[in-house]
Each structure stands twice: as structure tokens, then as C-alpha cells.
Image 1 (cartoon, rainbow, N blue to C red):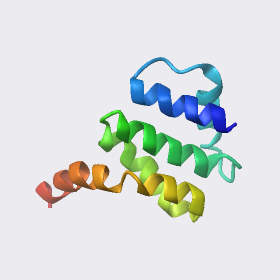
Image 2 (cartoon, helix red, strand yellow):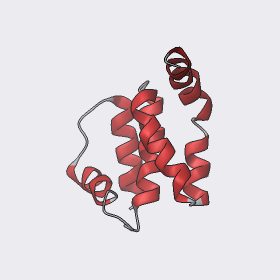
Image 3 (cartoon, rainbow, N blue to C red):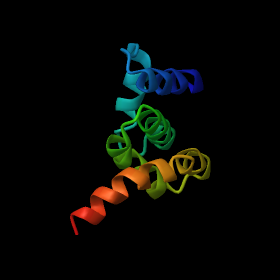
Length: 95
């Protein structure tokens, strides 16, 4: 399963088509109380942020932080500066 999340992350980062399995895992993560939910959110945060899509990563970042899963949160927190640099500016402009 970890390999699938890595493949998802790599595909998002490189902006290439992702094979069906990691996408299905990400979709499975949308099911409440899914065992892969928190991990999928954190890998999506990482991939989208590193692909230069911090606005898209923000949803997954927040969901990861809300999860309470320490491993997933640690992974997502590596993108805090990137997300806040871009999204924080947008937020401040609109308040």
C-alpha cells in the first residue's frame, strides 16, 4: 500500500497520469473511517504541494491535520511553509 501512495505522490508531482490502483486508494480514503484515509490525505498534500499546486493541497492538508494521525500529520507538516506562503497570501488579500 505504501508503494501505491508513493506512486500517487510521484504522479501528482510530475503531473502525469497515475495508474488506477493509487487513484482507487485515494478514492477509498474518501469513505468515512477508511483505514487508508489519513495516509492518503497526507500523500495527496505532499504531492500537490510539491507539484506547485498549494491551493489544491490545502484541502488535504487541513483534513490531515484534523485526522489526529501523528504519522500522517508529520508528513503533511513538511509542506506548511509552501502552503501558507501561497494560500495565506490569498486569504489575507480577501479579508
